[in-house]
Amino acid sequence: MTRALFALKLRLFRNGPHDERVFSLVTGLILAALVIAGASSATHGVIHEGWIAVALTVWGGMWLFGPLAQPRHEPSVISHEWLRGYPLRPWRLARALSWTELLGVGPLVTLACLSSLVVLAAPGGAAAVVVAVAAVAAQLYLLVWAGRTVAALAAWLLRTRVGMTLAAVQTALMLALSFAGWVPVAAWLLPRLGEGDTTLVAPATERLPGPMIDVLAAAPTGWGYSAALAARDGAGTGPVLLPLAALLTVGALLQLCWIALTVRALRRPPRPASPRRLCVPGRDLSLPFVTPEVAAVASRELVTWLRDPARGVELRSAWLTPLLMALVIASSGWSWALPLAGPAVAVFGAMVAINTYALDGTALWQLLTTPGALKADVHGRMAAWALVFGLPSVALAAVLWAVTGSPLGGAAFGGAITAAAVGCAGAPLLALLMPAVGTDARDRIHPGQQAGDPRGGQMTIFPVVLLAAVLPGVVGGPWWGSFLAAVLVAVAVGVIPLLTVGLLQQRGTGLLEAMATRGTAVLRAAARTKS
Image (cartoon, rainbow, N blue to C red; front, side):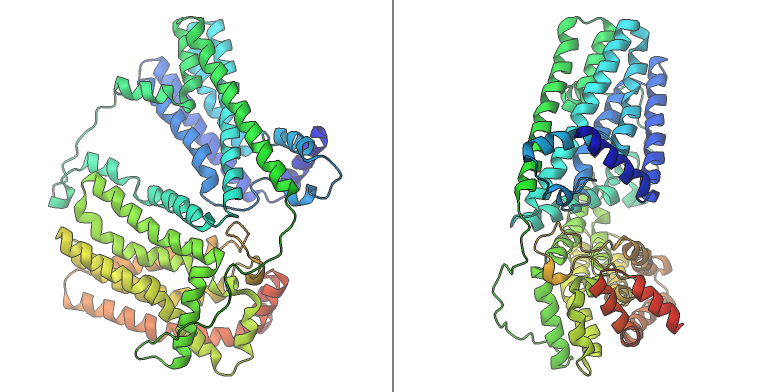
């Protein structure tokens, strides 16, 4: 059975999409080559070998936290849905399926990275090289099953009531580290940048602190490193065999955990969609300067942001990410940069709101069959976005400006206003231009279900809103700069919604058909026909 599953996975790799896999392979091999080059430099005394321990720890952390970057219900290439109906015992099927998890791009590039241990152990002779090869295999075994178990555990937890919060927190952590993780390093190199002092503090990179290296070597990601160095230095049998035995033991336990989680998934019958809360009439939202129809749409949108699994994860991650970024910035000593968290709320809010029409799914038919509902729907979505992201973004920038007295406070406050205006008007427009169709709203019962892949729309609106946020700081204090920002806000709020309404009237039927068939090919064909 294991041989048949291996053949199935190889066919999936050969006949499936290759773009993302090839990109990951090339990028991973380049990074692995850098680690190997660093190990070669360490053997010649150019850099300290402790930097290799740092690199391996970071690489192991990617195995642990990488599966959490994009939470989904089915982390395996071979879907459990395909195997659920087979007349086989779940434990036997899960055991056979487990060995196929060792086949993939991740284990291959990790194997290339861990070969740096062989380079480090080479000066110790043939026996040290043999131990290093065993350490590479054992370390790879542990990292693969650590990553696979974390992914399977996350997929199981996403089906529980804490799934939204779990997915949002881990996504926010990854995004915050991606966007603000460089700040502590920059603050270390330029500690007085907020005062206008650009004096560079050159760090000492010849040798890492001894206690830091000991901690990295004692972590599970450093056990292979410890065994390889112990064999090279002739430290004895104990320091060599103990890390290897620990790697194999913990790896076997993690593999058993993965098998148990897979058995649970195979035994679980398909569950029909059922509402978690009773649909009861809510209180009407009263908003100034808007019609009752727009207020009704805004009220519906606010409820949907809180109840829909896919939107709930995006809402929480969009708010947690700027707050965690502010925490990272505050810990680095760059308190003058804290007001920038205000525009960041608008940027991330725009990114998570670019797929609302596809997330609502086939419920779009109600708008298309109700006269005059399209204009109210567009303005209602904008009003709800302003309440959830826009006004809090401006308020956060103002509060942090008042607390820190930062010289960037004025630019951050103006950037929050312009970014909120562009995000508020641009998100519904992009939701029509680049819909990512997935599981229909009536069928989504937990955050792990695929609700479309909106990364294309997110990468499109991100630079647009970021440019709008940067504009007040770039143009500075002249009167024409403020006038330009005011014109941008007026155009975004006044003109873009008119384009969105017109586009919804033209493409609404095609969008509904695309969501009914769960594909955007029909929508693209209709757009080409009209053009």
